[in-house]
Length: 145
Image: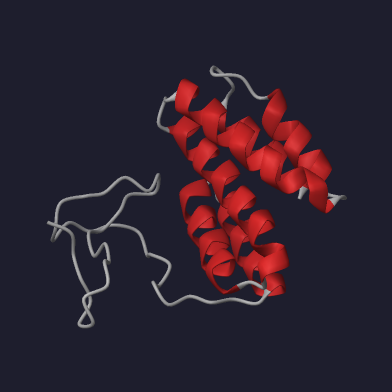
């Protein structure tokens, strides 16, 4: 059964490891992005870049998802695409190359129309392979951003 907040909205209160994998209730995990995180565009990029530099793309995904949920309509595809690219990087870290390529392609398709630097980020994401080194892939995406 999924965790719920007092208003009945779904929440995942389980702790997570540095790769975003759920841990058993009561286990010690890494700090999570709050469910109500609603950053400005600048804050989202700053926070996500910090996580990418630490090779924590799952947490960068949570940052981009927080922005996606509160962004103006014209920006939502951008933030959703960046979140999907970060999930793709997370799949690479977890050894799921096939799933990584699917999410990287979806994310790249969403962000390409936003111009520089997002076209470059999309190109980096699309150049990755199932067996790409996760650390190098994260570094390449971060450098393009």
